[in-house]
Image (tube, rainbow, N blue to C red; front, side, top):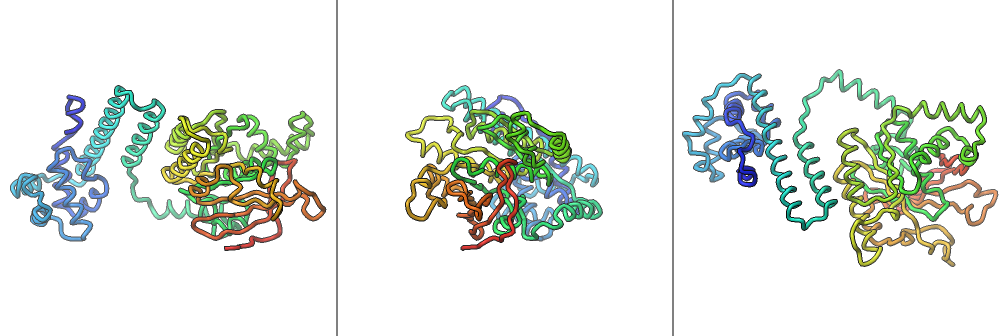
Length: 450
């Protein structure tokens, strides 16, 4: 009814189809089992039908018999019996006798009309707010996309799948995961010791990877991207520092183990070219999307990520790097702006249920520290308060050979899992091949510390 009040037009509905669906639920147990999950009370247009559908759902959830007698009793218990027209209306609804096939068809009509009404309501609200002029355009656009994305998600339905089909997919996953740490439940990093601590990059979690400049944080992000491309995990890579062409070039060098500096100077041997070509063949069909917009706000990032999730079902988002983002509004200081960006990235991970990896810088305190050496700490994060609070996982990259190279530490990198909300912290050693922009597993093992 609200749709009519806001638009002055009759909202999409089909009362006969609604009555048919309710009748099928009341007279046929098999139809009830199917339809109670296919349509929700809010899909019905008539308020009386909404109350009846909700009462049927309540009875079904309590595993009680569903017929016109128990339905009337439940409506009376809820104080809704008179609202629907009393017992005569309940008995009248059950007089429709649809076939199972027609009930499913009518349920599709009811659900489709429900989606259309929600779409009308949302777009009308957005239009009114646009005319009102109190919201900024990008804020309004973000809210519109979020609400429409939610309508699309709720409107989608899935049917049960055959065991044979599921077995085939399951063994495809088993073949893919063979040899990988059995405890990895998220998107794997490709580093066995690191995955042993984190169980992979988890959906719905914000992971911050931070270091001082020249430690290899962008290279680490590219390594995660390369692994996701190889393993078939759809990934969005937002590069605020490099162009998409540079990202692709460095990704190929990382994958093919070709000297990136030589490639930039055009010094590519036949062997290098062969390895680059072979490396590209392995990821040419990967569901990887690179965005190199130099100016990125949380609103823009969410909008682009939502579209990629809806269209390509991406399973991970990487942002390189957090401090290059802008809040898109006015803030009293940079710390408040970073806090808003950090909170937004966490919200994006929860909304899309994907891991969000945010590359971040550490402040100069690492270099200026007199005691404890140059090994980074969480407190070294720039504008660290909000990032520390919002991040589920914080990884700090450290290379002691950057400060003082020795035979023992040359090419040795350390990933310090300084925070993990749902797991242990620890330290993992990796080998860093700077010329290839590549991290590889080290023979050492994880060192849990908490």
